[in-house]
Amino acid sequence: MIMDSTIRGFKKGMNTLWRLTKIVVPVYFFVTFLRMTPILDMISVWFEPAMKLLGLPGETSLVLVLGNCINLYAGIGAITSLNLNIKQITILAVMLSFSHSLFLETAVAKKTGVNLFVVIGIRLALAIVSGLILNILL
Image (cartoon, rainbow, N blue to C red):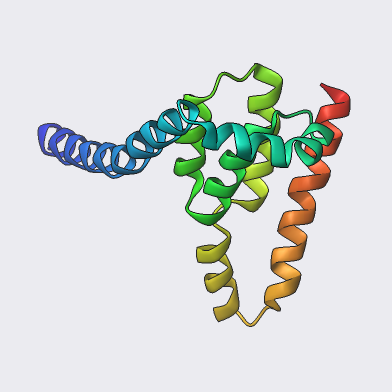
């Protein structure tokens, strides 16, 4: 009984590890590649003014886009490929906790009959307000 549970748990754990690895590793290499080209610098300069209000460098806009459009694990993969301090990682983590996977979770919310614009607006507003507050507090 214990051995059977252990084997099932190990198989499920390895399956989860594989599913996450398929997302995090490619995103990590993609963002690392972008860092070696002028593309990430152009993105960084363009978003720098808005990101500065949140206490973040412009390049972290890519983390927010990936986390909001793909999923939380894509955002994590992008975070790991950037050189960020604890404050910046904390701000990004809290912001993404409010607004990750917008497309998928909005589709789920639509099935419950909630107004999509309200759901998206609240989630994005909470992410931005939490980022602004954490930038001040941390």
